[in-house]
Length: 342
Image (tube, rainbow, N blue to C red; front, side):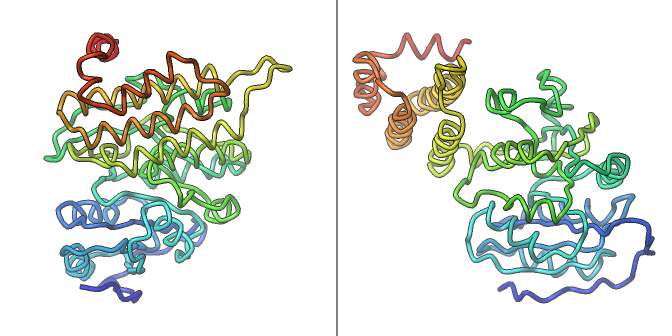
């Protein structure tokens, strides 16, 4: 079925409360037929009803749209489908927000699920804090079969929110997930939305720019979203690996080392963080004897290290070995054993 940019009217209407802001939910879809019905039902059964659901078809070639059309006929919430034609998740979210009519925007990925009070609790936070542009919550990890993996993920990690400095944001993964967010639409448009060049780490980049724009985000410690993890998720793709390095370069450009202020964020934060992340993935590729992935990750590592002003001879030799997975498997085995045990 081809998306036609036409609305799918609901069979019945929810009562409106004029004092409340209107709320639109944006759902980018890319071959999500297995999970999208459960996702949409979790939107339709919110304790604080939303004005509309905007589904962005990001080039589906499965039965996702047929599932959506069938379900829309039974839902309370009006639903509209907008064509994205394979533009990528970041651009699809941007297109959905532009097409939306709500004062507030909530995002949810096609395979995630909301707790019934998700919208209500986040919207009330924005009511209480009129100067805040963003409210977001903690989340629970679930697997492909809806089984819980970890509850209150940020709390369990000791990952404090909201962030209070740029250094906190760039030092580690933020874990302010798009599916956990509710924000003011106009603020999003003024910020420029998600960076369409990023297909990984676009949420960290978004949070960083929102923080710098004084969005004053507020955080709800309750776990209001079930976030699904997959054994074949996007973090295991070459596009994700390239996006990771692209984001590292953006940070390095925005916050270069400055001897005058004794600020060495690239040397002491950016490079160690992403070097460690890439090498962990490289080690996994070696364990699986996936030479194609290993070479792609070696290229990512070399690209990352290009932000270093003067790579040492030892580093250049290491990059030469990484580009040869069979040799790396022999020479670097003790190193990767230590790396994966940390």
